[in-house]
Length: 458
Image 1 (tube, one colour):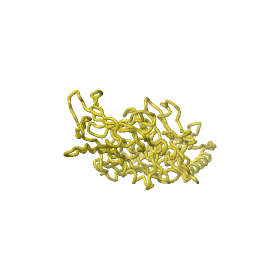
Image 2 (cartoon, rainbow, N blue to C red; image 1 turned 60 degrees about the vertical axis):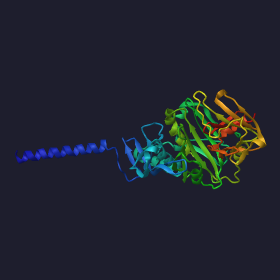
Image 3 (cartoon, rainbow, N blue to C red; image 1 turned 135 degrees about the horizontal axis):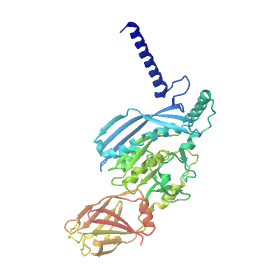
Image 4 (spheres, rainbow, N blue to C red; image 1 turned 180 degrees about the vertical axis):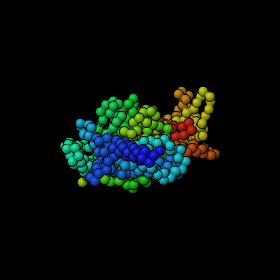
């Protein structure tokens, strides 16, 4: 090939490469850097004016029955969330985009035991980035102002003023707890499946707020108790053995706070605990009718949980806690000690050998309360109906049983030769238990073996 021909071919190739590079640069990359506050332009219609960097941290721990760590997984997920505007839409609605960085696994021990909880939290990571990016009014205001200037300079368009919080947040007004605030990232699934509007208590009742949705699912918040140490870590350690607990951090009003999720074993239920500066503890509960609905609505539940925080209120008076104290216990009840048996196959689990016809006496200890034959026994009957072998009932006393308090159970059968002793399962009364007894219903508690304790007003 002649030199002239080679030069022509080489020139054509160079021109082709330059044209291809220019096409790729202008039409494929979609990113143009400028010396303004502009972050990027995508397809000539999206601009991002602010990048907010955050880290989604969580630690999931499974405790055994004595409080030792059985399994654990800890993760830190870096996030970059961009606030911008899509100019192709006439409404000029703000847009949010979150990109995950390389996550850091900070520690793990038999992590398969907590896999489901771990996956649930990982699905929420992008929502967390959006929440952190949009909570700060300063960031939002400056993002909007920057976008308006850029669009005016580049396109000659006056961008409409936007309130990004109105686009992305819901706030619950008129809460009965004076220092409580709930403003959460807008829900996606619950509003489409609500059975009735959100209920906010105007007077004392067990639930402060309550959502009902799906087939038979609900989210509700209750006041739990006042913790003497004003330390949620300490409360968790002492009260949530044999549970899966997730510790996270959240941001409210530019303040970093700890938060705990507790998964109830064997149930489609999760609790989140909150404590204000006075030591008052509240619990937000999600109960789902089945695993599918639990998975469907869990993201909305987490959004609500991240939106709960407390503020300082001068002369704060928690009248709700006072009223609940009046309604969080029962007394003057009959106490029944029941021995059951499966007569169909003659299996008996009766460590005490409890028998109404015997001269041996039964002493029941419920916490510090003692129920003895000589002092307040009322009647003892043997009844083979309904698989009930023996029932011992004590007369009413002024003993007070409180919600949330753990009562250790033990039973002694006094014998002339040797006493039989049974150490039963401790019992805790929920607010639903208290309401049931005070409303005249019979409350049943299993204490181990084939033994049960019943409480009733009548």
